[in-house]
Image (tube, rainbow, N blue to C red; front, side, top):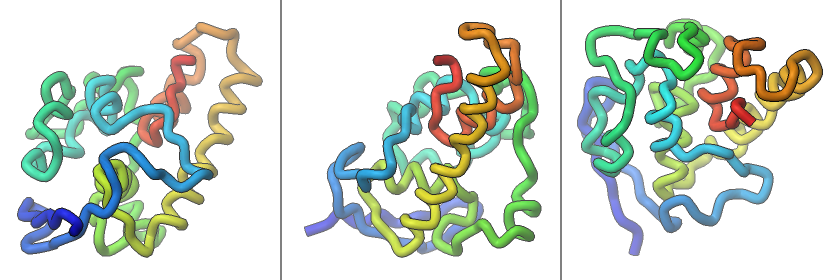
Length: 166
């Protein structure tokens, strides 16, 4: 029997979903993120604002070394110390927000990582695959190991679970 998660945070009240896969396992073959949600939070993503009110939904260990700021989006918390985010309103206007994951891709990924599977999986994985073009641009235009080259693109890659430090 699947575990049921009940979500009560600032964006969802009484939303439930089932965990049908083991944590961090049984991903679709075309989906192979390089970073776990915990690694992303520790590195610094989304200006630290993204996950401040929904800690109870995810393992406490994810937040032990997370760079978070409840008050505001702080680009200094990002690994590359640059703002590489668009406001949630932009994502809504583009139609990229699925109703079950009102915070967007990273919320979907966190839940997917925990074992939830949902009708939006194929679309989100397709979006994730599309971001890889930024890694090709870094490889083409930057000297290997120069983390100061294309910092914004590198931060975007971190937001999508690609390790742009490689």
